[in-house]
Length: 114
Length: 113
Image (cartoon, rainbow over the protein chains, first blue to last red):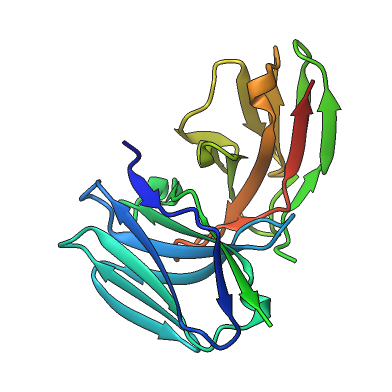
């Protein structure tokens, strides 16, 4: 069983839809949770970053972490065709120098149709 | 543009051969990370260097090695290549402030025939 599980999709939604992307994890030591976005033929780029449980909002994006359930989510409101990409969740145990040995989910491929 | 430069972008080689992938981190970043991305395994952490010293190892095969030079650029050496080594290899760098953010290059796509 992988430490981080993510539904690979693909997921297709119409423009303007609310998108929900999710990951589950098994390692209770994970404290920092991130969402990266990866466009085709590009490297991943950080989209959202949260520490421990709770919600964080940034424009059309909201990240939620539920540590009791070992479950994290990314919501995209008013989705746009430019949001079409692969979304990878990532997490790490702590703030030491090794914190950035991120464990990634396999990624969910999202297509937003005009 | 993340500021991380990787070369070559594409590489095709045969089984048993050896290749070297090169990475220049963002200006001022001391840490370099190497990740392998394949369809079946996703993004896998290979190794981390900080200011020239190995800091952490992940799922890196013994056939693979890396180093970081005094000018902070890094090289990933892959030897005795097998078909299963075909993948995208990403380099990432990070700054001093622990924001959890990695800046990824555009990757080197390796095809082993």
